[in-house]
Image 1: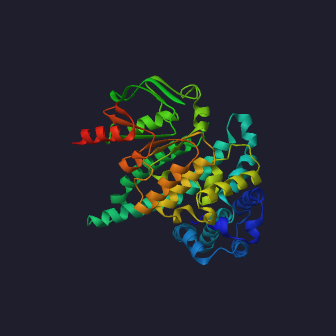
Image 2 (image 1 turned 90 degrees about the horizontal axis):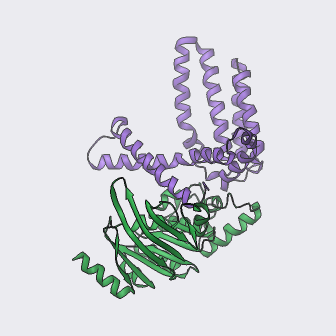
Image 3 (image 1 turned 30 degrees about the vertical axis):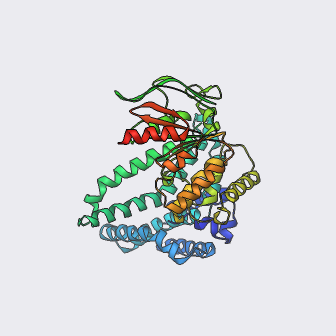
Length: 200
Length: 224
């Protein structure tokens, strides 16, 4: 997922305040879960999502990179649902999944991570009453987002290392080293955040 | 002024620094020694990333154990691997991230970020994805993320080890011109020779401490 597009884009969605986009996303996710129960509603939700994506003017390559995995998952989920509950139900469930995830991706692609952090900081202020530090929660969410390309890079390096030794890179070969490298990276990142005084 | 009084550090039962006493007031201090000699642990002690098992580390009188947050505001730290220091997706956002808890307004943050990036020749890269930078540019970004906090001291742990010659020289030049106290852990003896004082570590102890020529000669003797 190219989070950097959020900084370079200049669409209507890019210009909307991060807080409003987050609230709209929350409402949309609830509506998708509660109101999309028929094929007609699912088609309507997909059309609205497509219109929103076109408003976001996300480059096709970025959109494809960001969405291909969820599309594969939606097809698999849809196929399973088809088997158990029939075509109409499969279409509705797969559409709910696609709409819910792609809207969230659209928000992250059209909002600078810094603005997202600030909006979350403000929105999560009520959590202070429960003894939870909102800045820490928003930082955790931001780190989760920005770690996606890092894990992807680590995976690429491990694939290359496996090929260099003549080993076919598969989930079994790559799984354990990927976990180890990810934990090492998390360790270094934690130290770097401490050095920047983020946790003080 | 950085002061270490009888500082020992252990990882489990292994002693990595053994009763080190030092006072660092020079503008440029280089730290050299073999791998595993305790250099990196020493560097991490200076801004409280690592706390001493025994003894005290003080920066301008502030103990790293009891005043860790204040010490870290005074002492910045640059790591060997810039990849692990970059948190945000773009250059500008990453530098701004350091100012997250500074209480500055958005426009003040933007101004400081712009000023810091200009000082490091990164001003045209503000919206560039940080993953698209070269190794040298990434290290400069990591440096910018520290300098925007305006530390009094910068501790660098082998900041040029992963860089090619051109970027290594560029980072050296920038570090040398910084108007702050610099403690530089390095394997680069040319770089160490430009310092005001060189510390040589061996098996957790400072075995030579003084002017670059003598200290480096002592280190060369150890390596034979």
